[in-house]
Length: 312
Figure 1 (cartoon, rainbow, N blue to C red):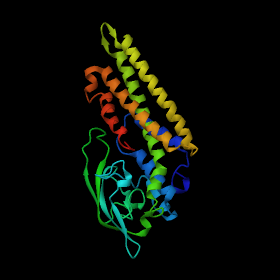
Figure 2 (cartoon, rainbow, N blue to C red):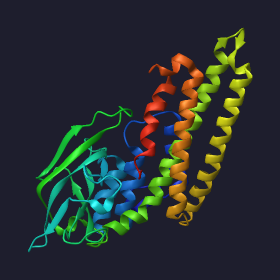
Figure 3 (tube, one colour):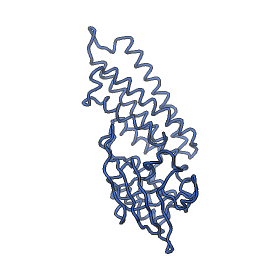
Figure 4 (tube, rainbow, N blue to C red):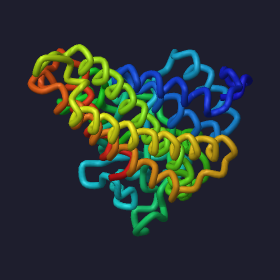
């Protein structure tokens, strides 16, 4: 984030180190990376100078927590199927009605980017717009926090908009170009998920490596058993392949050359590897791998959603 808006003026690789270390340590609590590296870039790239000055410094300081409301009960990865509407009024205001679900930071959020149809008569991606809305706006209601399989510390909520009136200044970018904006920002979101996946795999692999050295069976450490050594070698190889691809994609992202296809391939491959590694590591822990007191168990259940969000 540029210094004039409260940031440090550093590139995306510095942010990557931050989200990698959080994933490596298994800290899947508040959506820090979503706040800083998904929501804030929308405002930076498409917001007016007034919107940037009003929100970005507060977001950088942590005075406001942000979220992005895309997913709906009837439209998950299909962003062309959004049913939330934002109807323009004669005075330029918009009336927003609809609901969103699976929203990270939804319960804690102070500021939300809402994806809505400004022209419901148009099918597909056309007629979609983005709005930046403070959660204390009349008509904005937060629903219950959702009871998830994993990531128990992360705030994931439902949001509802009932005849919510927002001024024309809430429009982010140009009316009708929301879908294009979403597609432009998707590669960064997907490579972030991919990188978090590989970092999580690296973390659980190292935890398992330490465990098998200490675990005694058959007269010695199980790390000395050939079948265990083979499995660890195979697992490490797949992690390194993923890490190499992700690092290449991050370098492309730094120079604004990362395309949607490469980001999508990285997201697919690395989240698959993350889940495969977690499964292997649970198995190598034996019965203890099924116990929540062991980090490998948490890594297994937390990692499953990585293959879902960011586009199934």
